[in-house]
Image (cartoon, rainbow, N blue to C red):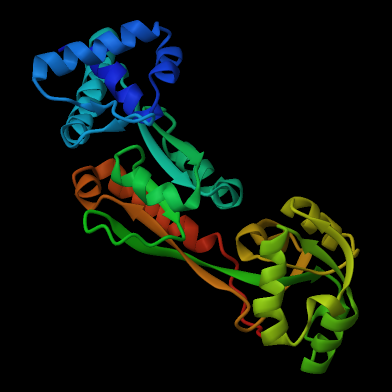
Length: 311
């Protein structure tokens, strides 16, 4: 077997298609089919099932896939070291998180990390991925750390509580919204205009299932000034005294710290834990990764504003 055959096999397994794999690898479909045939002939086992329209791995193919991925990575590492030398080697540390978290909660971490590593031999790469896939990505070794609201039960991974997402009521930073009594707060909910952070049905579900039940404010009774799925626009409109809004505490740290908005905690609206996910054996074996884990824990904890007032 050779690396080109293994790369073709891995591509077929990933795409589920000979034609797509051929395009991905910039070779012809007969060539990629021949790569697989030669690999199977040499190993004496069938790796890909072709009995249906859908291309699927056989049991042997599933086992071989993990080894093929490792050998390809080892080849790439070997080539890099031979060409560039260990003294110029850069270590890339991958962190994956949902888009909202990469957008809002990692700014200070990335700045602090860059300031502490000015030789640039260790590079942090931050990538957004679907929340439900993050634990799988870490398990497959495609990322060193993941941030996810899905707590994995995989015994090979560790899930540390990183922060708790909570829905807050944000208002303009003016005196009338500060230190409100319970009656004033209820009057604010019933009569002020709302900038709705709108994700369609999901947003309406939050109102119906949570806000209306815990705060006694029905979605059909509120005054809606605007609906928008861009949290930055929601923040700017509230900042300019155009309305109030319910929004996640993960996106308000900077405008709150700068005094551009006021935030109020509301009891039992929504609390969702997020976890720092990693392979403990991998982290414990690397001083660099251990240090980054500790930095991530600290930064994520401080990326959430601490508010005591609850209505």
